[in-house]
Length: 171
Image (cartoon, rainbow, N blue to C red; front, side, top):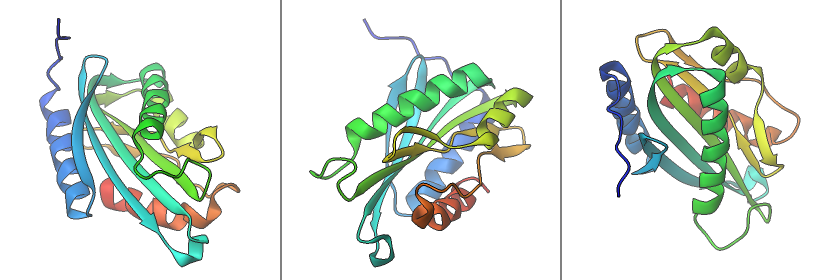
């Protein structure tokens, strides 16, 4: 038996379609998967630079539409997205051996509760020191995207790259 999907609200579906276009234009591979009752966009790319001591950064942008973004569903989605990224990163080297994972878990809704915006903007989330997420709460009706834009001590060498991608993906 297959699980029935909830159709995304129109504005949220439009936002995810435009996000898919921005990801593809930036050279990300895109695909679709399932989380709970939602269809999920997965964008991924891998970058390696000498300035990062040849560490490979696997960046995932994982987005789903929900009617309303709250702290509870954004937290649950963030945890799921981080584990999804860990299981689906490319390459043979394990995470932590010259490999790190950065995840943008994105929930898009026709409304975003203020506490969800506060939770998204307050800090990054980690599974361990090699997998970090910057949750993104998006109000599809035009109020924009909210995420942590700070510069943490851990992973500082990747912050400029990560924030440049955030600006590109979530204008």
